[in-house]
Image (cartoon, rainbow, N blue to C red; front, side, top):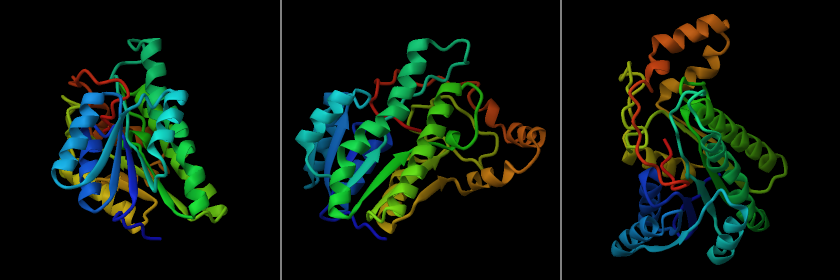
Length: 275
Protein backbone atom coordinates (compact mmCIF):
# COMPACT_ATOMS: atom_id res chain seq x y z
CA UNK A 1 0.00 0.00 0.00
CA UNK A 2 1.74 3.15 -1.20
CA UNK A 3 1.38 6.48 0.59
CA UNK A 4 2.52 9.42 -1.57
CA UNK A 5 3.20 12.44 0.62
CA UNK A 6 2.08 15.06 -1.88
CA UNK A 7 -1.09 16.72 -0.65
CA UNK A 8 -0.97 14.95 2.73
CA UNK A 9 -0.47 16.36 6.21
CA UNK A 10 2.62 15.06 8.02
CA UNK A 11 3.23 15.57 11.73
CA UNK A 12 6.82 15.29 12.99
CA UNK A 13 7.43 15.23 16.74
CA UNK A 14 10.85 16.55 17.64
CA UNK A 15 10.82 18.27 14.27
CA UNK A 16 12.89 21.24 15.39
CA UNK A 17 16.24 19.47 15.14
CA UNK A 18 18.18 16.37 14.16
CA UNK A 19 16.62 13.97 11.69
CA UNK A 20 13.18 15.27 12.72
CA UNK A 21 13.97 18.60 11.10
CA UNK A 22 15.40 16.87 8.01
CA UNK A 23 12.32 14.67 7.65
CA UNK A 24 10.08 17.72 8.00
CA UNK A 25 12.03 19.55 5.29
CA UNK A 26 12.06 16.49 3.06
CA UNK A 27 8.33 15.88 3.44
CA UNK A 28 7.59 19.49 2.52
CA UNK A 29 9.79 19.19 -0.57
CA UNK A 30 7.70 16.18 -1.57
CA UNK A 31 4.56 18.30 -1.46
CA UNK A 32 3.25 17.60 2.04
CA UNK A 33 1.81 20.07 4.52
CA UNK A 34 4.07 19.72 7.56
CA UNK A 35 3.24 20.25 11.22
CA UNK A 36 6.19 20.39 13.60
CA UNK A 37 5.89 19.61 17.30
CA UNK A 38 8.91 20.40 19.42
CA UNK A 39 9.41 21.29 23.07
CA UNK A 40 11.49 24.27 21.98
CA UNK A 41 9.24 26.90 20.45
CA UNK A 42 12.25 28.59 18.86
CA UNK A 43 13.61 25.43 17.25
CA UNK A 44 10.20 24.46 15.88
CA UNK A 45 9.59 27.93 14.51
CA UNK A 46 13.03 27.98 12.86
CA UNK A 47 12.33 24.70 11.05
CA UNK A 48 8.87 25.97 10.07
CA UNK A 49 10.32 29.18 8.67
CA UNK A 50 12.97 27.25 6.76
CA UNK A 51 10.22 25.25 5.05
CA UNK A 52 8.21 28.35 4.30
CA UNK A 53 11.28 30.08 2.85
CA UNK A 54 11.44 27.24 0.31
CA UNK A 55 7.79 27.76 -0.59
CA UNK A 56 6.45 24.91 1.55
CA UNK A 57 3.44 24.75 3.84
CA UNK A 58 4.33 24.36 7.51
CA UNK A 59 3.17 25.11 11.04
CA UNK A 60 4.84 24.58 14.40
CA UNK A 61 3.70 24.14 17.98
CA UNK A 62 5.58 23.92 21.25
CA UNK A 63 4.52 20.58 22.74
CA UNK A 64 5.78 18.36 25.55
CA UNK A 65 4.91 15.00 23.99
CA UNK A 66 5.29 13.18 27.30
CA UNK A 67 2.31 15.05 28.78
CA UNK A 68 -1.08 13.64 27.78
CA UNK A 69 -2.95 16.90 28.29
CA UNK A 70 -0.42 18.86 26.24
CA UNK A 71 -0.65 16.35 23.39
CA UNK A 72 -4.47 16.43 23.42
CA UNK A 73 -4.54 20.23 23.31
CA UNK A 74 -1.97 20.39 20.49
CA UNK A 75 -3.86 17.74 18.52
CA UNK A 76 -6.97 19.92 18.60
CA UNK A 77 -5.00 22.83 17.13
CA UNK A 78 -3.27 20.60 14.58
CA UNK A 79 -6.36 19.00 13.04
CA UNK A 80 -6.39 15.90 10.84
CA UNK A 81 -3.06 14.24 10.09
CA UNK A 82 -2.28 11.59 7.46
CA UNK A 83 1.22 10.63 8.62
CA UNK A 84 2.45 10.73 12.21
CA UNK A 85 6.23 10.53 12.62
CA UNK A 86 7.06 9.79 16.26
CA UNK A 87 10.64 11.02 16.34
CA UNK A 88 11.06 12.82 19.68
CA UNK A 89 13.60 11.08 21.88
CA UNK A 90 16.22 11.46 24.60
CA UNK A 91 19.27 9.53 25.79
CA UNK A 92 21.31 9.62 29.02
CA UNK A 93 24.15 7.24 28.14
CA UNK A 94 24.69 6.40 31.80
CA UNK A 95 25.46 3.15 33.59
CA UNK A 96 22.45 1.81 35.48
CA UNK A 97 23.93 2.62 38.89
CA UNK A 98 24.79 6.16 37.78
CA UNK A 99 21.40 6.98 36.29
CA UNK A 100 18.96 9.06 38.28
CA UNK A 101 15.40 7.94 38.91
CA UNK A 102 14.17 11.13 37.25
CA UNK A 103 16.33 10.48 34.20
CA UNK A 104 15.09 6.91 33.83
CA UNK A 105 11.46 8.01 34.08
CA UNK A 106 12.04 10.82 31.59
CA UNK A 107 13.54 8.39 29.08
CA UNK A 108 10.47 6.17 29.20
CA UNK A 109 8.01 9.08 29.15
CA UNK A 110 9.56 10.52 26.02
CA UNK A 111 10.76 7.44 24.15
CA UNK A 112 7.89 5.07 24.94
CA UNK A 113 4.80 6.57 26.57
CA UNK A 114 4.62 9.54 24.19
CA UNK A 115 4.05 7.06 21.35
CA UNK A 116 0.69 6.20 22.90
CA UNK A 117 -0.45 9.76 23.55
CA UNK A 118 0.54 11.10 20.12
CA UNK A 119 -0.66 8.11 18.08
CA UNK A 120 -4.00 7.82 19.89
CA UNK A 121 -4.67 11.51 19.27
CA UNK A 122 -4.73 10.97 15.49
CA UNK A 123 -5.35 7.27 14.90
CA UNK A 124 -9.15 7.49 15.14
CA UNK A 125 -9.25 9.99 12.29
CA UNK A 126 -6.96 7.86 10.16
CA UNK A 127 -9.14 4.80 10.68
CA UNK A 128 -12.27 6.79 9.83
CA UNK A 129 -10.66 7.98 6.57
CA UNK A 130 -9.29 4.46 5.91
CA UNK A 131 -5.77 5.74 5.30
CA UNK A 132 -2.72 6.88 7.19
CA UNK A 133 0.71 5.89 8.44
CA UNK A 134 2.20 5.86 11.93
CA UNK A 135 5.99 6.00 11.93
CA UNK A 136 7.89 4.99 15.06
CA UNK A 137 11.55 5.96 15.07
CA UNK A 138 13.02 3.28 17.33
CA UNK A 139 16.68 2.27 17.14
CA UNK A 140 19.02 -0.63 16.49
CA UNK A 141 19.27 -0.53 20.29
CA UNK A 142 15.65 -1.67 20.24
CA UNK A 143 16.85 -4.94 18.72
CA UNK A 144 19.89 -5.65 20.89
CA UNK A 145 20.72 -4.41 24.37
CA UNK A 146 23.80 -2.17 24.65
CA UNK A 147 25.98 -1.35 27.66
CA UNK A 148 25.25 2.11 29.15
CA UNK A 149 21.82 2.07 27.54
CA UNK A 150 19.71 0.14 30.08
CA UNK A 151 17.06 2.88 30.01
CA UNK A 152 17.41 3.93 26.38
CA UNK A 153 17.62 0.43 24.91
CA UNK A 154 14.68 -0.79 26.99
CA UNK A 155 12.58 2.18 25.87
CA UNK A 156 13.42 1.43 22.24
CA UNK A 157 12.55 -2.26 22.67
CA UNK A 158 9.19 -0.93 23.86
CA UNK A 159 8.94 1.31 20.80
CA UNK A 160 9.67 -1.62 18.49
CA UNK A 161 6.99 -3.73 20.17
CA UNK A 162 4.51 -0.87 20.02
CA UNK A 163 4.99 -0.40 16.28
CA UNK A 164 4.88 -4.11 15.50
CA UNK A 165 1.74 -4.70 17.57
CA UNK A 166 0.10 -1.65 16.00
CA UNK A 167 0.93 -3.00 12.54
CA UNK A 168 -0.69 -6.32 13.43
CA UNK A 169 -3.75 -4.65 14.92
CA UNK A 170 -4.33 -2.33 11.96
CA UNK A 171 -3.82 -5.17 9.49
CA UNK A 172 -6.12 -7.55 11.37
CA UNK A 173 -8.90 -4.95 11.48
CA UNK A 174 -8.35 -3.93 7.84
CA UNK A 175 -8.23 -0.26 8.74
CA UNK A 176 -6.13 0.92 5.80
CA UNK A 177 -3.64 2.38 8.30
CA UNK A 178 -0.04 1.18 8.26
CA UNK A 179 2.70 1.15 10.89
CA UNK A 180 6.37 1.67 10.02
CA UNK A 181 9.13 1.06 12.57
CA UNK A 182 12.57 2.56 11.89
CA UNK A 183 15.65 1.03 13.52
CA UNK A 184 18.83 2.94 12.68
CA UNK A 185 22.30 2.46 14.13
CA UNK A 186 23.97 5.60 15.50
CA UNK A 187 23.24 8.73 13.48
CA UNK A 188 25.71 11.60 13.28
CA UNK A 189 23.35 14.26 14.66
CA UNK A 190 25.29 15.12 17.83
CA UNK A 191 22.87 13.37 20.15
CA UNK A 192 25.35 10.49 20.39
CA UNK A 193 28.47 12.65 20.23
CA UNK A 194 31.53 10.61 21.07
CA UNK A 195 30.25 7.15 20.15
CA UNK A 196 32.59 4.97 18.12
CA UNK A 197 32.13 2.06 15.75
CA UNK A 198 34.65 -0.77 15.55
CA UNK A 199 33.44 -2.04 12.16
CA UNK A 200 32.59 0.93 9.90
CA UNK A 201 32.05 -1.24 6.78
CA UNK A 202 29.34 -3.22 8.58
CA UNK A 203 28.14 -0.73 11.20
CA UNK A 204 28.86 2.80 9.96
CA UNK A 205 27.80 5.95 11.78
CA UNK A 206 24.87 7.01 9.61
CA UNK A 207 24.49 10.30 7.78
CA UNK A 208 21.39 12.23 8.93
CA UNK A 209 20.29 13.34 5.46
CA UNK A 210 20.47 9.83 4.10
CA UNK A 211 18.44 8.45 7.01
CA UNK A 212 15.75 11.11 6.60
CA UNK A 213 15.37 10.37 2.90
CA UNK A 214 15.24 6.61 3.49
CA UNK A 215 12.47 7.06 6.06
CA UNK A 216 10.41 9.20 3.67
CA UNK A 217 10.96 6.66 0.89
CA UNK A 218 9.79 3.88 3.23
CA UNK A 219 6.63 5.83 4.08
CA UNK A 220 5.76 6.40 0.45
CA UNK A 221 6.44 2.78 -0.51
CA UNK A 222 4.28 1.43 2.32
CA UNK A 223 7.02 -0.51 4.10
CA UNK A 224 6.48 -1.90 7.59
CA UNK A 225 10.09 -1.92 8.76
CA UNK A 226 13.29 -0.02 7.94
CA UNK A 227 16.56 -1.20 9.51
CA UNK A 228 19.81 0.67 8.87
CA UNK A 229 22.45 -0.36 7.99
CA UNK A 230 21.36 -3.68 6.44
CA UNK A 231 23.85 -5.64 8.59
CA UNK A 232 21.67 -4.96 11.65
CA UNK A 233 19.04 -7.23 10.10
CA UNK A 234 21.08 -10.27 11.15
CA UNK A 235 20.08 -9.62 14.77
CA UNK A 236 17.06 -11.99 14.80
CA UNK A 237 19.20 -14.73 13.23
CA UNK A 238 22.04 -14.11 15.68
CA UNK A 239 19.61 -14.57 18.56
CA UNK A 240 19.28 -18.22 17.54
CA UNK A 241 22.84 -18.68 18.82
CA UNK A 242 23.50 -19.77 22.40
CA UNK A 243 23.61 -16.75 24.70
CA UNK A 244 27.38 -16.89 25.19
CA UNK A 245 27.94 -17.04 21.44
CA UNK A 246 25.56 -14.15 20.89
CA UNK A 247 27.35 -12.07 23.55
CA UNK A 248 30.72 -12.93 21.97
CA UNK A 249 29.49 -11.75 18.57
CA UNK A 250 28.16 -8.47 19.95
CA UNK A 251 31.43 -7.86 21.81
CA UNK A 252 33.52 -8.78 18.75
CA UNK A 253 31.62 -6.15 16.73
CA UNK A 254 32.46 -3.57 19.40
CA UNK A 255 28.83 -2.75 20.12
CA UNK A 256 29.24 -2.78 23.90
CA UNK A 257 32.30 -0.53 23.64
CA UNK A 258 30.55 1.99 21.40
CA UNK A 259 29.39 4.19 24.31
CA UNK A 260 32.73 4.30 26.13
CA UNK A 261 33.53 7.81 24.86
CA UNK A 262 29.96 9.02 24.77
CA UNK A 263 29.64 12.73 25.43
CA UNK A 264 26.26 13.56 23.95
CA UNK A 265 24.96 17.06 24.25
CA UNK A 266 22.60 18.93 26.53
CA UNK A 267 19.46 17.40 25.04
CA UNK A 268 16.41 19.58 24.99
CA UNK A 269 13.97 17.50 27.01
CA UNK A 270 11.52 15.84 24.64
CA UNK A 271 13.03 17.87 21.84
CA UNK A 272 13.47 15.08 19.37
CA UNK A 273 17.08 14.22 18.84
CA UNK A 274 16.50 10.56 18.17
CA UNK A 275 19.38 8.28 17.11
